[in-house]
Length: 213
Ligand SMILES: C[S@@+](CC[C@H](N)C(=O)[O-])C[C@H]1O[C@@H](n2cnc3c(N)ncnc32)[C@H](O)[C@@H]1O
Image (cartoon, rainbow, N blue to C red; front, side, top):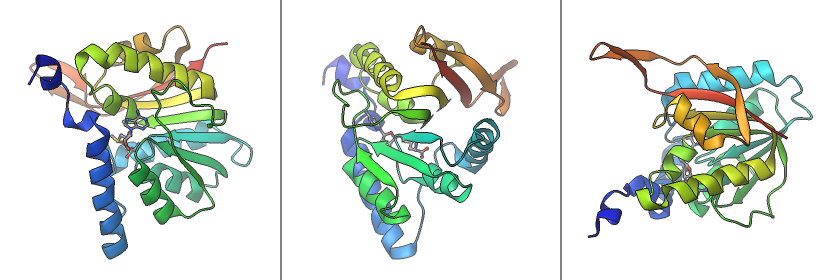
């Protein structure tokens, strides 16, 4: 195995997500289990509450959930009255799972956020990324810069206003560096901190980025 292959995490591969969502689909069909909520329920609640506070017009605002997984973010936004919701994921198994759980009235599309051609995707007022950029950047280190640039280009092409971004692998400053000059910081949302070796650190970073014209 080459050193490039060694530094690529299994979580950075599509096979990993296809297998995971195939299992989640079986669990949902058999036991009605919603599946994994990345970063836990309190971060999910904080995300949904923040969107509800900052996005007043639920009937007209268009929202894209980037890397929708089992679709639980869409599910919560639907319950809170949002209407124009779309979920995308590069795993076709995720799309099948989200459609099975939520129904065909919501648009779900299989799209790779790092592809150069994403013309089949619409334009949206708001984007949400909970853990998807983290997963994309678990590729081998020699591909990381290219993948990151491709992802930011896609977000820039399709998101007209704000991106709600939650990451557990990158700090606020690293994330801002990835997105500049296309997006700038609108607001950082407080998340739990922990003390380790005398230093205060965050387990999760939650940023709201604004698209620059
Ligand atoms: C950590 S999971 C987060 C799922 C969901 N957002 C959540 O909060 O539970 C990362 C998701 O990103 C998706 N993903 C990874 N790489 C992608 C890419 N290049 N384009 C689109 N989706 C991708 C995976 O299939 C997976 O559903």
